[in-house]
Each structure stands twice: as C-alpha cells, then as structure tokens.
Length: 221
Ligand code: C5J
Image (cartoon, rainbow, N blue to C red; front, side, top):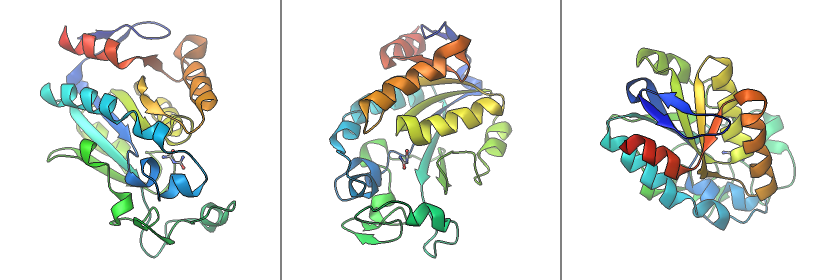
C-alpha cells in the first residue's frame, strides 16, 4: 500500500489497482501554432510541467503501474465533433482547420501527438476522446474495469477543463482520484488554483491533490 501526504487527508492506494492518467499532453495544447495558441493562450505555462510529468511517469513505469494517455482528438471527417464545439467563439484556427502542425485536433496529425518527452510506450493505453472528459464516448471505464483499477492519479492539461471534467466523471463512476498539483496546468493560474481548491473541498468531494514530491516519496517508500 502506498500512502501520499495529500489534501485534504492522506491518499492511500495499491499501485496494482491504480492507473496514472495523463490528460491531453499534446502538441496542440503545449506548443506554439496549435489549438491552445489559436485561442489566444500563452502555451509556455503548460510546457513548463513536462519535466514534472516525466519524473512521475518514470517512477510509475519503474513500478510497472498502468498508464493511460488521452488525446483530445476528432475524426478527419469531423463526424464526432458537434458543430457547437467547432463553431463557438472566434479562434484564429477552428478544429479541423489546417495549421502549422497539421489539422487542429484531428487524429493522426502532427499537432495531435503527445509531446515526445511523454510519448506512450508499448502496453500503455491511449484514448482518443472527442469530448473534454476522458470517459465520454471512449470505453475508458470498461478498460479500467478489465484491469481491476479502483484508483486514478491524474496529471495533464488543462486543469479546469479536460483534467477536472475527467476527474469528475471518474469520481461519479466510483474511482478514488488524486490530482498531482505541479503535474497539471492551466493557461489561467487563477482557474488552476480554484480547481485544486474545489476538488479537495468538503472532505475530498471530487478527490485529493498532492505535490509530485509527495507522490514520489510515497512511491519510493
Ligand atoms: C481544452 C483540454 N482546454 N485538454 N482542452 O480545450 O483541457
């Protein structure tokens, strides 16, 4: 059993029944020229968490823990992208438009790939998700059930959108969830802080949060 000093209280898990879930660490969100930048965001903030995510990923892999990577991703014919999602707002590039890293948020395009530092390896689960949440229309819950997973440790971007949505979906499906505080980031620091606070509020109403140092200490114990 691993114990992590977390907020609002210790998070206990068995790595054999816990998956590390890395949300949307794709070039489209963390590199210039992608979807995140097209919405007017500074992607440097998100790029900065890559080394932390890599440290946790390395530790998890060393213990043979299950790893899940997600990508926000649509089919080339956009049949899984609701017009309401594609047409909202006035980004410089819409989902499906051709940008410097290929078509934005489209499966198989260069920008849709996970950053090389965190690239999946054989045996890890890769989920292409058309929504913000990792459980919507993906079969992720069924895959996790097959592996006997009861606990999830989350990292990735962005904290208040795809990470929080996925954590809430997981919580409603009965998983105990920990969010790694410095392994997640938002284009808006205030949104990240608010999300961390609301997740752990009211006795871990959505889940727990902890710095990567506490998780790594728990894993090494
Ligand atoms: C967004 C995500 N922010 N991965 N996607 O549109 O959080």
